[in-house]
Image (cartoon, rainbow, N blue to C red):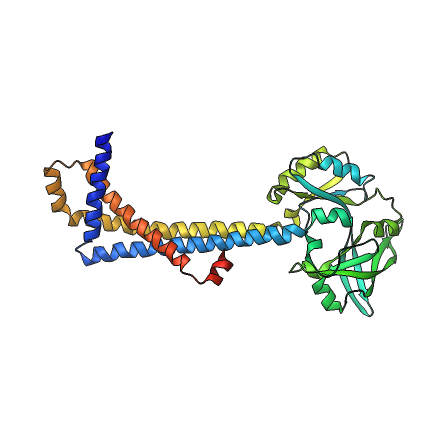
Length: 352
């Protein structure tokens, strides 16, 4: 064991001396430095690129996934007979975090002569605060009460709606023959305006669950479906099916990947491509190291012969030049880390 350790110490001592003495041939010295620069750039690009992608993924989880349900169980027949029973069964899963009932319909929002198509969400004001972070993103007014409406800032600006304004919601009605009849009207007061960012601020309107239950003539235990927030939203596909298999209701099993999964898939794809590109960059730099070591062996041929006549084994010679390559790679990695740390603080925050 001691002989094995002494061989490594001896190899490292010679490798360090050869490395510090540098290479006498200018071409070999240039290849060696170029490989270090290549590794440094590859490491810096890998750190920055992956930091940006991880930042996108973090923002996806903290913004988009914080305001949309991770999984939904929507009644095929149009409504659940008892949403509380469905929610209780869903809550038995280990990944369950919170849940609540909902009714979701397409509607038209009218303010005087201005009209815009919206998706109307009827939710339980108390339970929704556990399922979604939307109530915490109110920038004007307050979260829902029993007879108000909350809408996005983008929609409010586009239609010229202000806090405490009265608006009308036109909800389509379907007759017994399956055709459209005269729409139902809701006249509500704007209680709050939220801001998430992106398209969510332009097409989502929220009212209390009881508002639509009364409009449709439903009982308090009726709802169109149940929405669920999970501990790990990226496991929504698997967990949603597991929860759905335990329910007694005839429901559609939906998860956020169906509507917004393309955003996450794009991030994963770009991250994989970045991995591949950086691996190729590092491979070229490592090939340069091997080339420089091959030429270094030829340059130190006489020194190697002298050392072997003094009793140095072939294994130790191989270790010497292997350690020289690791020293070159280590210096390149260190340069890359220093390059990233030397970036301006604002850029570091944006990439992290």
